[in-house]
Amino acid sequence: MTARCKSCSAPLEANTNRCQYCGVRNDVDLHSKHDYRIENPYSERICPHCAIALQTIDLKIGSPLYIERCNDCFGLFFDPGEIEILLNHTVSGTQTINLKHIQNINKDRYQSKKVKYIQCPVCQVLMNRVSFGYRSGVIIDRCRKHGIWLDNGEITHLMEWKKAGGQLLALQKQQEPQSTKIRVTANARRHRHYPLFGEDREPSLLENLSSLVWKLFE
Ligand SMILES: [Zn+2]
Ligand SMILES: [Zn+2]
Ligand SMILES: [Zn+2]
Picture: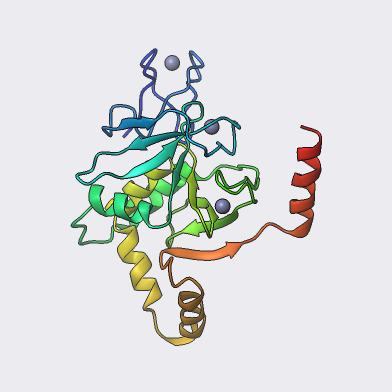
């Protein structure tokens, strides 16, 4: 499934939303795929990449689901629990695990993306980087208090992952016996409210400091 540039119709490479032919940035998540309504064009939340106000949008999935969206880089911010609501609404009834498909969607995904910690759109504290589910291939940015940031393309990737049975696989992994059990149980306890997530990777003191210093010179 290849996305196409809305401006020149050229196929977009996996994992990028900037067209290599005409340079236009495309919203590969919401453009023509999901119906949404702009509730507030200038919320108080700030895009961690572009430093501009995020829009509050209603995804219109039956009952209102308000999330934030950057109109520049098309990243999305979800309050705790909202990703699960969206995933359950858009992808349901998956009965089988298609390992091959999971592998394939992840093959496109991995790039040597430089690890960069970004600030929570609400409290501005550096967010943790957490892998979403088992083998989803998506590392999310999470503020424990306020929610989860997804770069453009990541929610679509998670939907494909779930459709391929990724969430079933994650559940299966959680219930796995033997040697992994103790660790899994400990993790499950630690992540009581986020059963889908792996181990947190917290920004180190040095990374916190360097972001602070960076702020001073901005
Ligand atoms: Zn183009
Ligand atoms: Zn942005
Ligand atoms: Zn926060």
